[in-house]
Length: 186
Length: 291
Image 1: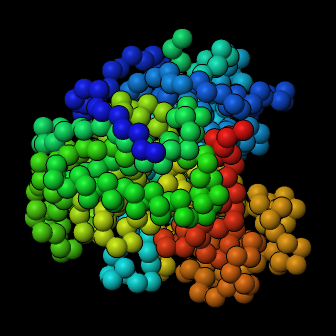
Image 2: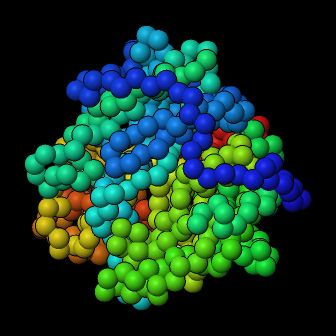
Image 3: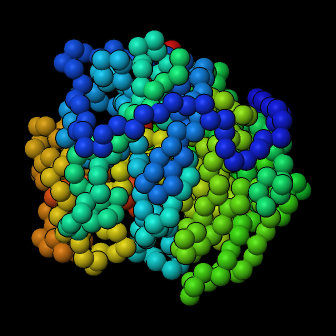
């Protein structure tokens, strides 16, 4: 059966309401591995979520909005053994800085783009990458809404200054470090 | 331009597996469809839903997935198609709600809409949305990833959406081993750092690699080795399709990084997801299945 919902009002483009508190963290600090005590499965069966919407303009990331939503949150990514991994992810942490939930994210702050040539133009290669230094847009992080959750920490691999991946975020080779921390609103 | 060039009409749940609070919610949003073309968008969205739910592993996760069609009209049909250097472009400038355009940043096939505007619309109509896709009413081949996977109506462009869904919703890495092409320098050896994504690894230890449990004892590890790290590995697969092992070359590098199967949707669009990618998707969507 098909269910229809009318637009509640004319949806306006542009910025969502900005009611956030954010705290930049020391970029040089490495990510802290989770405590030895087994973390609670923060997302298991949870139907309370906080949706954080971020905007990015090049490498800069801003928190645009936090919304509490009744919805199921996907399960956490591994909470152990990621301390030296490369990539981009968000961590829900408690006041003691223990990681409760972690979501690996395909780095949205890249300075290149995935391009899909027309099959007639490139029959051998269905995907390629091209430089795209001025990327901007939004991305969303969903975390469980728990009493314990205090902040969301964003981690990503720093840009390589030398070597084959120099200056290109998709090729960043070093372990991720935390670059921003956002306090959750209660 | 933008929101004055159309109207948000509403949303329709075209695949209903249960309450939005308990299911994984996909929103497919229209761009560049005039009011008179919304019937066509309904058909296009249904076709996308059918394609998604026919693709493994989504075919066995149907009970976990709701799909919502979000109807937004535009003043004109299509997407902006500026003259794009020597790559073509018709110069068309239709007025559309999300301002989708080809030739983004000078790249002919890079089709991008205003992702912030898309998310604002979708969050109002489908508050429990997990992933949004933008279907652009244009026959020109193109698409893009990011928080809102975007694709045109060109034949095969829906495959772009499925590949990008792998990135955005399931954190899957690219399994191709080059950037622009296989001869481009600077892609010889991957760093020693282990990637955070579930479908690529630098660990070639049979017992401890990420997908160790899916590798049969009879499968050689590594399964392929690139003899010349200056280029992509040209050898054909030495094992039957579907064999899980450690195949050298992935994550934009020719050597020292491994993918789980010889081919996969995260390596070539048009292919199915490999077993390891399927496992990652199943793991993420299992909590959305009815209990």
